[in-house]
Length: 341
Image (cartoon, rainbow, N blue to C red; front, top):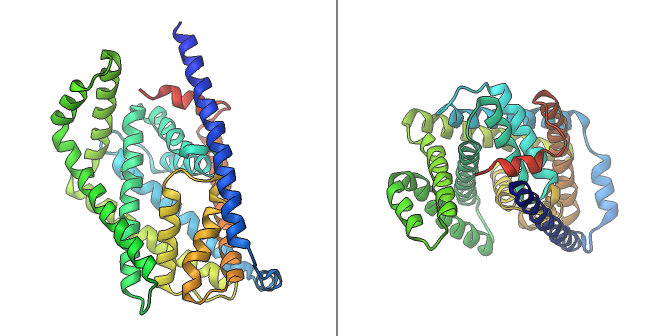
């Protein structure tokens, strides 16, 4: 009977995934149409012909370094409960990014959490909590990076400044919640107990809450927090250099504040479940953010296409190597979902 319930649950998840993929493809098509409407194709081809391979290779190397630093940063959280090598964390991180790029609903977060959970004998819920904590802090960092970039620019479109201010408020609320939630664990458990839920569902929700709060507590030690924040700053500086080098490869000029603002916008746009490979999302964001700072539509599109090509190359190469290193097998996504409480 339990096998039948599991099969029905996987079948429902599969139908939801198919619908999610269909909706994502429709959104991607609409955004691509908006982004490319009226583009000057000869200008795009002229920009592509000027591309310098050496700067593109440097960008590939710099982005690879960024992912190594991201794995190291995640490892800072994981070490709160178990000793996990940075190399294994890197392989799992790249598998996660590979999954996020080509699977709906950010399934890569679950996959990388299950992989590390198996490698270090940790609860999948705990590892997923550290992964989501990392993502939440990244979003908060991106919001404040946007504010810093905007304040350093002489003129900014009013709509962009207003949007960043709204996101800053949301980021501040998220940050406060991240540090307060573990301190009110008893209150949260009592709230779950008072909900009109069947006992087995309430018990499952309580166990899940305990694991997530344990993952959030990983940052409550000052030394771990400062290490995490320091690595976050270095990561976004490395990413900014990479973004500037891609522009130089195309004989385009991208100032440091503009690079920060673009990266923040791309990061925030991809933080929630979106289109496969962020196709359409990235094009729309690039045209919207770069146009007010002197980029022609064709230049912004060629730039973001090169940016995505470098990202895909890095993620596919290291992600497939990671799958081989950690022994990922077919059908893993369904098994990963089944391992969650």
